[in-house]
Image (cartoon, rainbow, N blue to C red; front, side, top):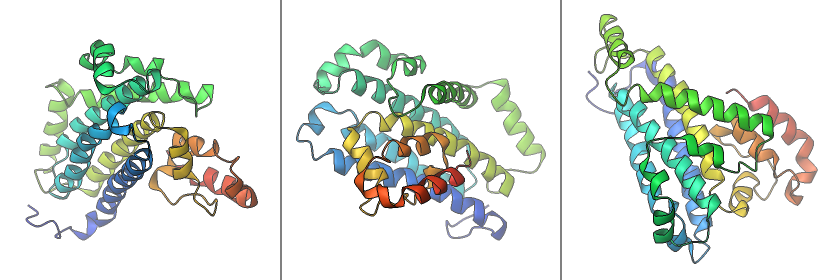
Length: 258
């Protein structure tokens, strides 16, 4: 077993570096949005993310700690929580942004309690084209079903563990393929979560994030996502981007990988 976080076998270093990038890029976005949205004096009074971001951070910080020790299943289980949380925050904030936290908890009591992502169909995903919305909701449904099989004891979760054991993949002896498969799953779930969360904060925050003062494409892992890339394109109208728009458009298209 790996005893220290610095002892990453050479064959795992590339994929573990990707794990770090997947996690750190989410944290980077979250930190920016918290500070930018907090310019609104009512942020802590009417935005669920003003305190629920701590739940997301706890999960994200734990992912790197777990993965480096060969512990994968908890990260899969917790990814479902982040996805569900993101959907519910987006639903509540888009439907009644200015009401107080207490009013939100009362108004959306049923939606909050139900362990379901079906409310995602009610969210006004204004940054996405209609066909992209359909693709996103279909993908989220598949991803949610996939990770839900790890939340409860299911034949799939049992087979997953059995197959790893049969291949000698005990704790701390994972392969690069194991981490790659985990990364492929997490990057898609986190990207979907970021799409929903992007719709939960003011438009100026997302515009500030995507278009820096030089108008260039932000160097961010999740620009590889077709959904977040499309969100970025919503801000091509900005003055800062006009002189570099042709190059940004090409780079954005070429950068998409999932």
